[in-house]
Length: 95
Image 1 (cartoon, rainbow, N blue to C red):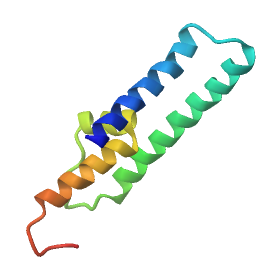
Image 2: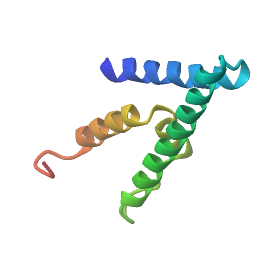
Image 3: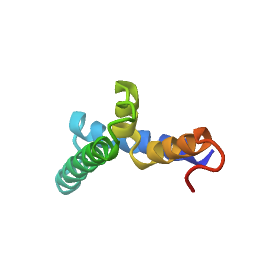
Image 4: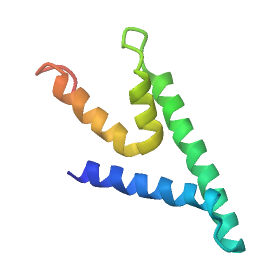
């Protein structure tokens, strides 16, 4: 429930930042939002890169749709993925 609320919040933030590109806000706010958008793209791309780098060779490569969701939703998608991985793990293995 809270993960879906976080995803919705992230979509609203992306929409707000992209709206600034289409219909710019007044000058000081426009530049601030441009910097925030750049920072968010870099951080989400870094998160996706780190996810790919931490997967072992025997693990399947993430699908393109999953990679897009990680880039779009960031940490909220990673938490959902981690919960799914824990649920799929056999009892007694791992933590």
